[in-house]
Amino acid sequence: MTFNRSRAGTFSVLTPRRGQSALSHASSLKLTTNMSQGPYYIGVDVGTGSVRAGLVKPDGTIVASFTEETTTWRDPEDHRIFEQSTNNIWDGMCKCIKACLKEAKVAPSEVKGIGFDATCSLAVSDMNGKPVVVTKGEQLGQNGDRNIILWADHRAEKEAELINSTGSVVLDYVGGTMSLEMEIPKTLWLKNNMKPELFKRSQFFDLPDFLTYRATGYNRRSCCSVACKCSYVPTKNGWQPDFFQKIGLGEFVENNFAQLGQEEVLTAGMPVGNGLSKQAAEETGLLEGTPVGSGVIDAYAGWLGTVAAKYTLDGKLAKEDPSLDESRHRLAAVAGTSTCHIVASPEGVFVNGVWGPYKDVVFPGWWMNEGGQSSTGQLIDFMITTHPAYGRLKEVAEQRKTNIHQVLADELERLRKEKGAESLTELTKDLHFYPDLHGNRSPLADPRMTGSIVGLQLDSGLNDLARKFNVTLEAIALQTRHIVDQMNAKGHSIRSIYMSGGQAKNAPLMQLFANTCNMPVVLPQNSGAAVVLGAAMLGRFAGEAQGDAKKLAIENRGEALWDIMVEMTPAGTMVVPAASAKEKKLLEAKYKIFLEAIDIQRRWRKEMEEASQ
Image (cartoon, rainbow, N blue to C red; front, side, top):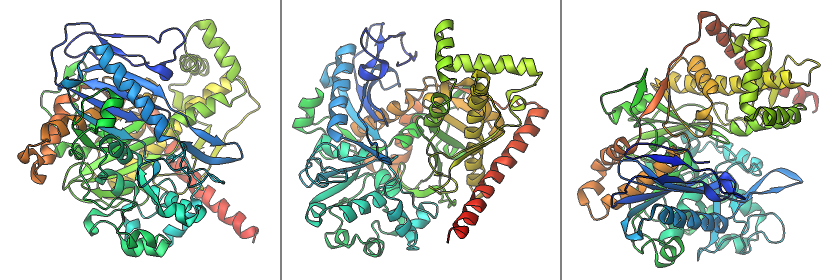
């Protein structure tokens, strides 16, 4: 479901029609007051399981928003495999855009710009833009729908190990270790498994860049995609020939990186080509030439859509607009299936196990670092749905006419009172969970890390499920602190966390973040809208910058985009740390045990490897 956001008018929350799910077609935000004329901007957000389009006014009011599910293919014999289709995503996006225009009764001529964000997934096409299959087997490299290796795909472990053995300067800009989730390990896997003649005719995109290419016909890469995921180093003249030759991708050097993007890269929101192509305009229902902003990875769109917010505390709104310099103290945590942690800085800060620093990916001259947890929302779902009491949990939720998370919250509160515990932290003080069931992205950069739990009892009932649910939230919060601590220890100055995504609706988790990290957490007015709003900001920047030499000037882009962010971002709500002295001591002890669990796992792994030789 899409939730309401009230600003200039009154909005209503619409439930899905009969036969529709909130994901499969789209619920919408519907304007009930008289609408003013444009301009309007469209943001397109491609997430892990869906694509969403939002129609947005210059003040940030979301006039309409629609969502379509996307298809992900798994391999039943290989848990590492996750694949998608650009055709499937594009078709869903077009449906969403047309639905927004129809719902809001907005003419295509009133849309003055469109921006895209997407997951950092590898999209492959031939040199004419036709999709190329990435599935292992006989069809690999042929034209066909399944042409995306999703960000979560872990097939390229050996390729990542090779890359990390090179000692290349490229590694300095990804926290010292390249993740197998990035695009170059996956591209190298394709090189190692695809027929040479088919690999030679393919081109490789981070998904946001494919979408702007598909929309405009112009192959212009974004600095966000190529610097963050494709081993492009802006401060070292871009592509690194020695690195690509050393890892076995020398053909990229020979063809002047035509397969990765050889034209000048663009900072966030810069106009791409001549705007929407005739074909894309017909497919989306928009006008040919509608300005298209250079895209960003979805986490960076979440940063755009949150960190410029004012906030309310105790019902009072902060008076002053935040400055661009203030952004360096605000960490954006974009929390969905996984969580990304984005922070800006005027100087490059190198943090082991944290991606970056990346220069120019949003604002010219500014740097970004990106931490991450590979599985958070997915982890919460996994811990609930795999527990023996899951069936009972659903029954109770149905009986009480509420959702399963409320049942778990009620059960935890009942247990807390029954045990005489001051807090939920005290209730589960003897249960310790380490959460890396899908490897560690940050700050360890170790895909071999696994999960562990200490304190198990002969209990498979709803009480046990509730306790494990609580320590799952606790583990996510503790790992967030681990990432923030490492960033600040290396030179960042993070003072607050700005949330977006579905987890921002989980009030106990947000308070746990504030208590565990000992800093305020700012919640967006609409937890599900921040990312699509960030994408719309890119569309607005492109629309206003088209033909405006002053705004396009490199020295003005940063402040111009920041001003758009301030104007379009609704005020958030601040959650301040509220742990008692006793709970603070318990959380500190839990954090110490959390760090010890890392050392123990690595030591045990080493001992077993030595014993097996």
